[in-house]
Length: 272
Image (cartoon, rainbow, N blue to C red; front, side, top):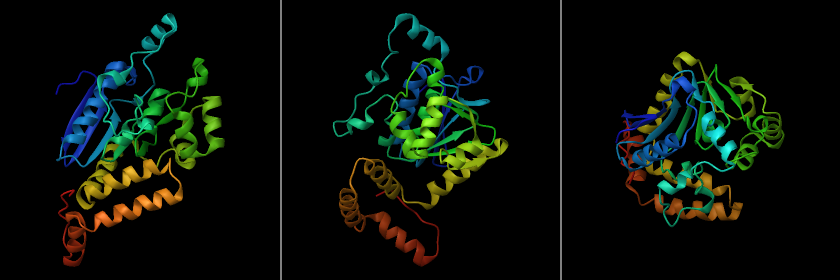
């Protein structure tokens, strides 16, 4: 499939989705949104892919919504094109994950955000829906919304406090100040900070370890457990875990997990 505003490539069982408007710091457009979703679906279907990396070309990850798009909205007083119209949701998709940017949790493979530079506004929102975030040491973060006369959009008022706590979320949203990668790490907004020059090498090494040494089935089930647990009680989460554990004992990946450990060899997981 050809893409206009992203680059999609698969290597070493890793699908890399690169936002590709470097001259605009990868400012988000409706076209980009549709293409990212198509690429995520493509990676989800591809049995050769076990991990997904989302990053940006050039100096930025994503500087937010394209200003021409925002200018058009301001002039028309209307919302941008609804990206949900391009893809029918499965009937069993949680309502929580049906939004135009909230579908990342439904992708049954881990998504790592490699945040190589400016991550602002809508770009920050998109990064929050990644399962893990690894930032370059030069990356800068800002919510931007309050400085554009906007509000905490696209679920960021739910996501951000769960990642950094209420005080940090209020700080970042109300002030819209810029924070460094090291501040983001201290808050828990990102999991790691790596030198910009070696960011993708570090991310790919991390992703490759997951792709080669971890059961795809385990990652798929655990990702779903963790996201859905945000809406469950402890008793509900425990009940789900007990049933999933029972099913795990019957799988090929469980048998392989025991066998490769006992035989002291590299695993050969199939995801089944």
